[in-house]
Length: 247
Image (cartoon, rainbow, N blue to C red):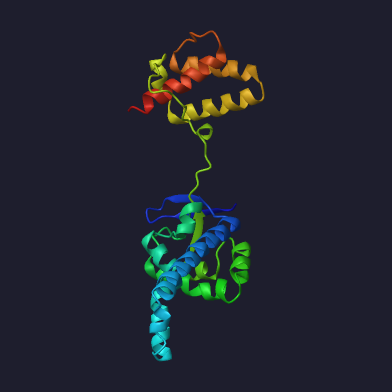
């Protein structure tokens, strides 16, 4: 998956993961199922059970088309309405946790969603999705023609970063810290300690773990009370998170 860097109005760069082609297609299929289900329900209730088609028999063709359009307009405007109301998401996108965003950092407007909806005629309807698919694959920001015109892209909201990629440690609510002096460490110190410790454990480099223990003792003035270097580093990280999360 490619990255999308958005520069916000506050000149802050935010990196997002662009939604994959597979997720976008699956979201489209889910939305299609919703629209088909709606159309079937409307037909069964109004045209089959209530006999609306018989009522329309004596009407002129324009009146008949107008009534049909009225009942099925939610299917036609489905994407436009939901993306506008749900801030860039349809039901399918919401389930797949993907979203339409502006690539300039602003919130997408109704006009942006309208432009995307209009270009669906070319991207999806007339071409069977081929034009939109090719455009998403070949563009840097994974944009179909509607996205390029509206200045939008589709990102994933899924957070693939686990707790192991941060300075956070899982601690129980009844956790009792051992070393109050860990507050001498900074977030950057804690992050370096965790990254170094994690890699050393993976590589079974106990020499690095021992050096890391000495460095922590030097910086914080704490002495290892456990006798085990690994347990000491684990406790340091948990204690650090215990105190900093409560500040």
